Image (cartoon, rainbow, N blue to C red; front, top):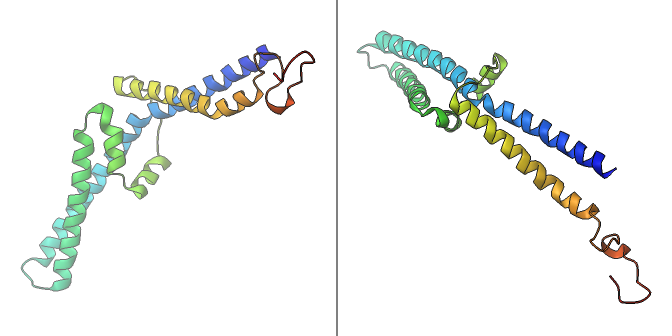
Length: 171
């Protein structure tokens, strides 16, 4: 029975490592697809800002000036996020994306997301990191249970279930 439990434990660890490794390996592909969509939003925001600015022109209309200011601020925010993600080193691109993440935009990217076969170094590093993280977390979760059910070195059950040795003290 012990052999079967060890094999089952190895299987669970391998599956968790594979799932987490595969998931994290997609970080680069997600960052690339997010960047493409963000670039489109940035370009559209710039067109809207320029159009509003052109239509407002030299008028002193407060509403027009406010709209132009909001459109310009939106464009600058998107441009700053786009540039930061695009210029980030490949290994830090997902981290930079997380710092500049627009939740609504990320949700839309996830809806249309196409998984990729990661062959670049950064994706492989993320895959290995995901596998190691899964194995560490799995060991941390199972550790208390393993300690509870592990037999003592004396062969007696752990804890208060120990038997009294007729020839000596409690063991």
